[in-house]
Length: 169
Image (spheres, rainbow, N blue to C red):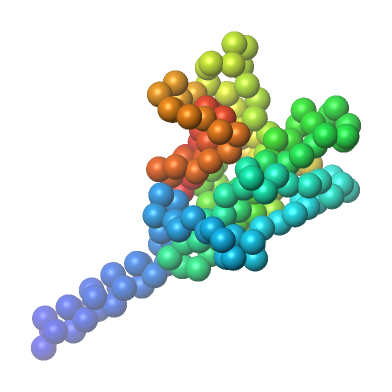
């Protein structure tokens, strides 16, 4: 009887842990078509500005838990030089996410990429809240082996901004 109870308790514990641990970012489903259009954000609010996003440079991921992660580049043309320098893109997270080793809670954030000189080295991805306060930063590695870099893409658990990438978990 004790073995049966112990086995049931163990099975229940494993089931609860499996339900609570989010799927790794590499296991996320990339949305396309109507599902993408329904979740796509046309303008993103940062520091009292509604900044247009670039649809062609937006990735929307849906996890097994039904939670979404939206990453996209911003069109900062016509905005102040300070804003253009600070922000490259935005992210909307429906669950706590590790961005290159930095824990970022559910919410909406802007991000910037600080490239080194020369640009072929590691950089820094800096995450900001919608008010412009720095939330965290992560080392952005440079991938020389990437066959065809595009402005923004998600592959193998990595968010790429050009050839620079951070791991998303």
